Image (cartoon, rainbow, N blue to C red):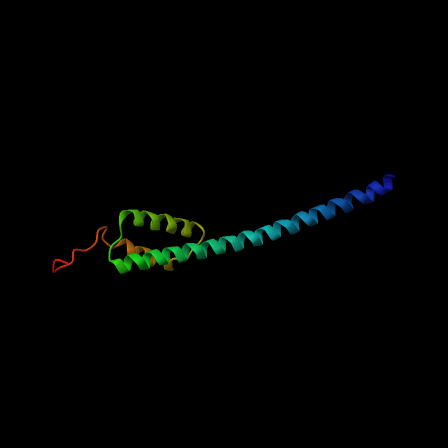
Length: 104
């Protein structure tokens, strides 16, 4: 009986620890994929909003706040600085629409 315990306990512990290590590695891969997907979604939303407001020629305060929040999350996840250039260009827009000349 003692001999069985001497061999069984280390074998079971080795198997359990191997399983735990495998699960942790799989979990890390999954987390990395989810992080990358989130970065792509945020990049898409930011560029869509920036293009919209750059086309309009102004950036309302509520949109400025929204883009700022999106970009903050994008940066915290490790997004690149290329989107930051677009965001800064968009932030240079006035908060109200430009007045059109000609009365129309």
